[in-house]
Amino acid sequence: MLLIDPLGPANKVNAIFNIAELNDTDGIDTSDVLRALEGKYEFNKSVVEKGGYFRGTMFWFPLREKASPISDDVYDVGKVEKLFGSLSSESSSILIFLKSLVRLHLLKMSQSGKEEYVLRVQIQDEKEIQTRRQSFFSCIKSASSKQDVASIFKMTIKEESTTRPVQLTQWLVVNYYIVHNASNDFKRLIQSPKLGLSPCVGVAAKIEPFTAVEGHIFCFLPLPKEGTKLTGLPFHVNGFFALNQNRHHLKWATDDQDHQYVSEEILWNEKLLTEALPLAFQKALDTSMSNAVTYGNKASLVEGVYLWIPNLETVLEKWKLFFMTALQLFEDKNIVFCEHFNSWKRVSDAFFTTFSNLPHKLEYVTAAVRKAIGSCGQSPVVVPEHVFLTLNLLFGHQINDISPFNLAVILRNNSNYKFMTDKEKQALAVYLTSEGNSHTLEGLDLLLLASGEWDTFKHNGSTKYICSVSEVDMFPGSERMFIIPYARLDQCTKEAMHLICEKSKCIIVDDASAVNGTICVYM
Image (cartoon, rainbow, N blue to C red; front, side, top):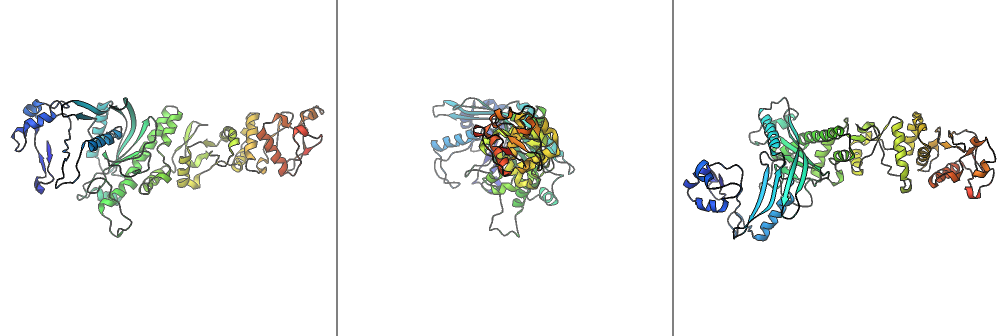
């Protein structure tokens, strides 16, 4: 048992003794202890009188009813209920980074003695999780300077509450202990007896259900939440951080601080963010991608990978450096998914298909464009908007985002698009002219003739005629001289053909008022 008396002498603040010695401890009435705790979580008289062993951990917090020399903060029922509520809101994640605890029970007892469970939280498959935790921390104790230690596992949390039905939440948890990959400055801090801190960090994201979380900072337990957000990241971060005196905040360098001298605690936190946590994040993202591959890259699993990547505009400034450092580790690694080839690609090998400038009415062309890109040997990728913005910010020099111009280049270098359906090729022609430029069609077999064949757009090509269906029928066997009549085209393709002829300074007349012999000299 541990008793803490903040008002005691410096050498007597903490008192530690065996539970079996409770009867012999001055100032403690065993009957009071039993009256408060007997029957709670298997704590009973035999624990005190016989073995002196209790399998678990209980915290007894004296809640002040009047101000004391320690604090003026006093508690009433309302404040206690608020504490219970804040604990419940964090319940699904509170156990994920702890070393030993696998269950958390919150019990409310009235003055009459009536007991009510407010909250029960426990880890499913707790024996397996305990084994993994113990293995990780055992490896840390025996770790040499030649290798880092990592532990990666899935953890399912079961929550039972009086206010909501039973909930199951699954987390992907990565714990990481950096030694070998630490810089010399970081190694000096790791070995500092003055600091006495461990370079142990972790990250965790919710994977069932797949939803982004409001990223929280843990120092094994979550730090108090103050303000609108703690990090702006879509996952939780854990570390043996250097905290301020009230253990509410990390120690940071301030803007007005003399930067010629920065304390070792501040440097320590900076090293955790820029050296240790990025490696934990790398393990997490690699694991998420491997899991997606294992299960055939199901859409939900691919989405789960992208949940690790935030919109950097929403990340707090102090945490941007961490994430930018972390994502830089993937500059030459697979990180985006290509559905066409069912595989993950590097940013530099991908063709992003954001269609950011495409009018809403032309969205139907996107599937055909992506198919054409893939058919021609390139890797079309679709990512959430915030992921593209973040990747573009970090790897902008490697980003290829599709446009009519670079689609035209792809099609000219590979003729596989010719085997696409007529409808798909019409969609390609519409997209290639969607920015008002008909020159993107030069050299491409995307001119649909009245004969049903496809001809090539050539600057010096032969004259082709645009006529009504009845007019084309007047020249049997000469269908290759005519462009497909407008009556057979959808409205967007008609508009694209209008544009082509306008750019060629030709008169174009709709089928309803077509004049025999109206011609279009293309390109």
